[in-house]
Image (cartoon, rainbow, N blue to C red):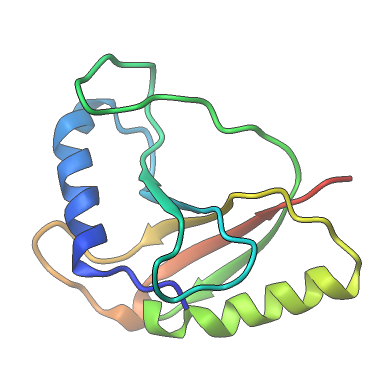
Length: 131
């Protein structure tokens, strides 16, 4: 399970305020750890943007493309571990070599003001892999 802590929510809020009008899609977290971690995970919070911008404190770069093993998780963030278990097991069963970072794309989640209904959250988990 990858918890979206209050600290990470603040990161998205701050980032969103800085790049606001340039945002071109839902929030994303990139995870760099090759093993699952609930605490002290190596992650980066980001938004896709329309074009490169020069804003103090913001790093802009392009993610590499390619093929991904993908899973849509429906439900609260606290149950993401179930979807991660399925996708990790499947990737191992087919001998897939994962290219990190793993991506979580928050298609539907809490809003800036209201929490919303966690049972209706939708998170896409992407495992980029080598052919």
